[in-house]
Image (cartoon, rainbow, N blue to C red):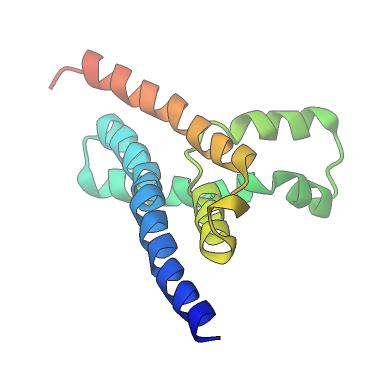
Length: 139
């Protein structure tokens, strides 16, 4: 029992620290990318931070949009598809948080690869738009 307890005690902190090291920067990147986009668009630090925080908060809504639309009573396939496409336009902090919870709970083998790929794919549109606006904006 003591050997098993020692193994568990040695493994847990390593998983915790590796999860924080790998996924916390991704979580912060979701907010950073959104804030930078709104900062470029509004030229206001306060508006950029508030709009970025609010818009990134919608990512949890878009992560489970099928359930939300069904609960509201919207069964149109067109609206479901449109909302699925819109879910890729906002960096998904909720997906990163779910990946982190899975890593905390069951280790790195419990991470859903499709959810992690979705989270990484959501960075691309806003990052590309922010970079394009940054290059073409006159300061």
